[in-house]
Image (cartoon, rainbow, N blue to C red):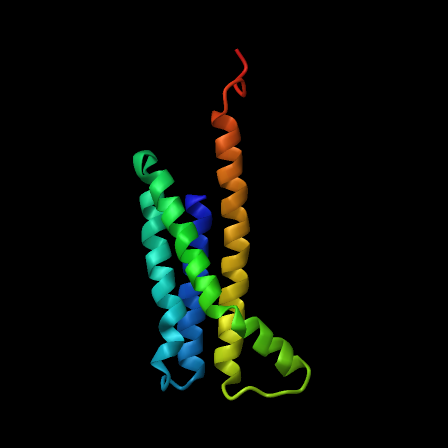
Length: 128
């Protein structure tokens, strides 16, 4: 999962930079995904060290949940755009939707990984 976290970080950094460039460098809030990406990169790097892995990955999952909750409205706004209702800031809505979907996918992968790790630690799960 540390590698997946670093890939997510790169995606969010690119999303933030692309959004900022697409706004004509006039909307610094377009860099918010890049800020999240920097934190995910640090957590992914920390998770590469075995003693820090559990804590770093749980922190990454918590950050992903917070980020998802903050950007989930973007998905609804994109569906509204597809239905013909133009939001005030279509670029922001699209960026939020991409970020929300990426974070949701990451959360699903985290939960699957946490469950697999717990199952592997359960008594009787190791062959003798």
